[in-house]
Image (tube, rainbow, N blue to C red; front, side):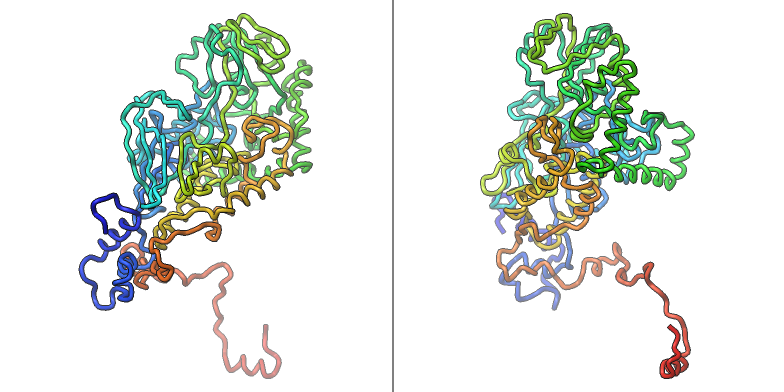
Length: 633
């Protein structure tokens, strides 16, 4: 084994397995046929089957996904592994650390927007605010001792697969410790000159997608003489630019809908710029919410009861989850659920707009409910009717020194502050180069044509996994649950790599493209394919639906439960095909050789619901009855 250069994954495996069985073998301990043929195969033959080789994992991002991966290593769900979680910002939290605009909240009920392994009975309200979700994430990191794996203020700027040694080399740049750091091609703000390279066997992208914000594509932004804010990069001192000021709010997506009622009382006057109609609905799982789908606070008595009785709290969460899962039919064209949602949406919007039915006619879209992610808007429609608010329809054409000019020629000239609630770049492409096999840079590949397999793995990217990539279940239910299920899926792959003598796995060349073709064909029958500009199509009306799973999230979870290993290329750590089964090792299982950890070797004997104990009967009598034709059934 070479000692004067960095070790390959094979070298590290040899070193590890030799360390488990040092010295000369006892008689019959090793497979002699391998002794002079392959050093790794012989080392394996001296250890139990399914002994995991050590792997090094790097996870990028310390939001929900990064914490989920850290916990999988911490609890041993991924055995014999080390993990480093690099976070570019100054603290954990991901999108809930970065998005802190007024009114920022989650449209999924709080009891279901949490890890199943870290239930929180102390949520303040049914729909949680941003600060409460961030507090929960921090509590998880601390109470589950996950901060020991996390390095904040460290930004990943490059990752490259080294085929000669079958490892990833990851370039890490320290930041200057600032609160928020942008990760985007060509942007180096906050980076220092301190850079180092780490190596890992497994690279996991946990960066998500609601963190690559963008200014609106509007000319003359630099001309505006007041303060311009973006909802996704909200400064801590923004209040002074809203209180008593004339504010222009651009956008009626999720953030714009939440911001308007939150600033209504503070602002002197608000211009609301709306480019296109949209459905303003109740939040998800509103069946368990307050009147009309409104939010409500949990009482201290209710929180205490759930803390004392976790089983009751679990059943409550399952009821909400059942409600969330039952609504997927809404997204299928011409379904009864879609028809009912449309009728309900019109009725609710009309009620909340009261005498301003002129706004209703302008707001009602001609596309199906759900084409854009439904926009829960508690208080939004009511705010539009306020005498403080003036709705301005049409496309924003340009910024001026004192306001905004629209494409129709309407111009405001008394604006102090502009708020751009204009969303994110949801192109799925990584924010830094990721170089895999065959000269493929995932950044370039997904800029041109974002496609993955089950949103987790990608073409030419060995031992690379990601969360919420192309074709993930973004449009339905809690993403935290999806993150948990993807974590288990990744753990299954890592375990197979560790215990079956593989250096890496990668989707077969045709798989991502074939999966994309199926996904787009299936998605064409959904409301998501309707003629609307949506985040699912990266802000366009005619874009492809590369961001959504072709089915329900329950369908997605079932697919993750049973990985199709046959859709992947598996590269052995032993070059010869004759050694394909060297991973069977000593012939004894890891369980047998580690009785302290696995005292039960009778796991295959069980008594399930279909089992039936044999009754005691008189055998002679039974034989006679059979001969006489009088046996009982």
